[in-house]
Length: 205
Image 1 (tube, one colour):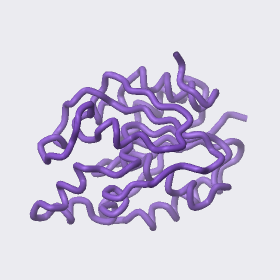
Image 2: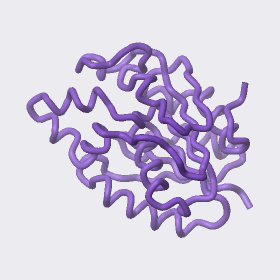
Image 3: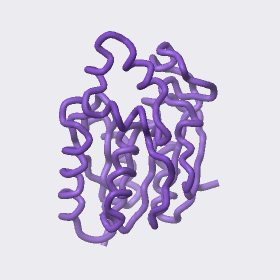
């Protein structure tokens, strides 16, 4: 049976943003599907509940792949229910340790509204990973994006998330590639690394 891969998009985006990665993972032999959620208006709790129901309805081995906020949401959901998936998690540019850009944005007029129900998780992040599932992170190092304009980002970063913000204690593997934040979901290299980690629990050399 083909492994299922649930793809989670990032803040301010919708499911269509994962189409390129979805196509590449399908060619690589996986059965990818997109979990679409309203990152600002729905809130993390409601999204996590729907994700749980979706995953429970899938047969065979299930993996999660999340971009930015989507990776944090995926990790949080499995942290809360370690039996949710029997596969692995890949995070693309996810601020697992909390986002300095989000904290800076929240200080601007209207910033909290732009973050909506995702604000607390983005600002706080997670402390560490102790679950049985292996988690791999692919971070970007091309500083192209609007996040750096908010202040607080330290090099290397991908324009929105610093590499240091992606290094959660307990990760199985971590790679930094030449990509900007949004570009991580379009990167062929990121897709190849993702497929390798889902199969082997480590990124290809």
